[in-house]
Length: 444
Ligand code: DSN
Image 1 (cartoon, helix red, strand yellow):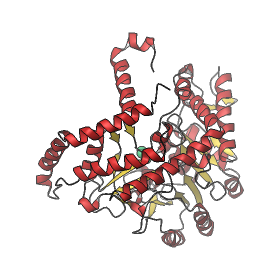
Image 2 (cartoon, rainbow, N blue to C red; image 1 turned 135 degrees about the vertical axis):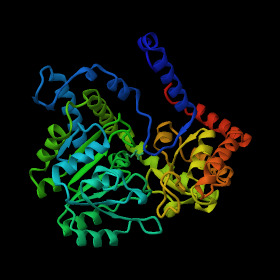
Image 3 (cartoon, protein in one colour; image 1 turned 120 degrees about the horizontal axis):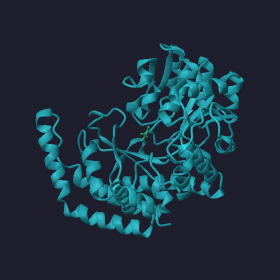
Image 4 (tube, rainbow, N blue to C red; image 1 turned 180 degrees about the vertical axis):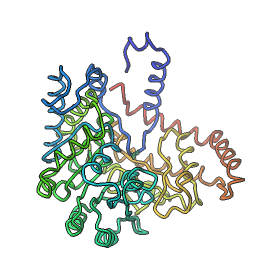
């Protein structure tokens, strides 16, 4: 994947890239916020645009020599406008958190009230969580999900009318169901709030028509570009027609917040790669890809549940699933993640709504299908993978996880050792490897 120059100049980094390439090739990447970008995207990302400075916006720069950067950024903007049906796009945020930060900076003053989905209910840090800037600088009010795992829209309305936030977020990092954007739109209008949809996780599904678009119902849309959208790491802030009707200054407020408010020079290599990814997402086959992600997620959910694994909300309507491991005991997410890693499946331990344990030792596993779908896997493979995951979890989550801190360290070390030496997991690893070989990745 990488060329001769790197091999000659830096053998250590070259070697690590080779190893990471093999790790991705030989395993199932199931962290739902990850994907495999195309070679074209990575070529643009590794291009000479990385050498340029271009503070400002197309045709309004503080530096010379930007005629080609201007064209690349304009292409990215125009493609995003077409793909999502929005009026204004800023493609410069370095990543998702800075993109969301720019929305605060554009609209709120310190101490103003913001509302978002609680982190423990699947929301994002930047939607008002207390250790994040969004929960420290602003007065954050968090809404939850119901015991069945679905958003509690009644609670959202009640809190919005009670606290009158200036900004409401809809969007999450661990929510397996469709977002009721229309209902959120009505609530925000009633409360007089700006409504921002953070579609970082589902952007590819929205672009491909596999998830309802928030665009008609919200004022602002933020997204990262590297998850289901399958681009380079990066982010965008978009303003909708509804947003401009509420506040005609919104586009310039966002642009000023990104630069010079928060950032310096844009990452032009990233912008060029975002343009490439958006070009790919505009192709008809991307719609097929987006639909298949959801079909795969549903098939995987079915297989896991048939094999005795409990899922938050009993299924999935998007790209991700949240496994509830509480039937094995509290705090078993770590064992699940370690066991699956041993079997060649990469996932992340995650809290589940009303988790009886802690965020560091949560009781759930978050996983998803975007990367497997990129490899060409379909329902048949999901059925088999569901069985492998269920078998692995049953083996690993049976180990003791003591609540008393004093006994915990030793118990974790013992469980990890058992997982490491489990011959059944080695057999499952073999099956995973066979599957990976059938769906080659970077050699395509
Ligand atoms: N880290 C991202 C995720 O995994 O969902 C969110 O920022």
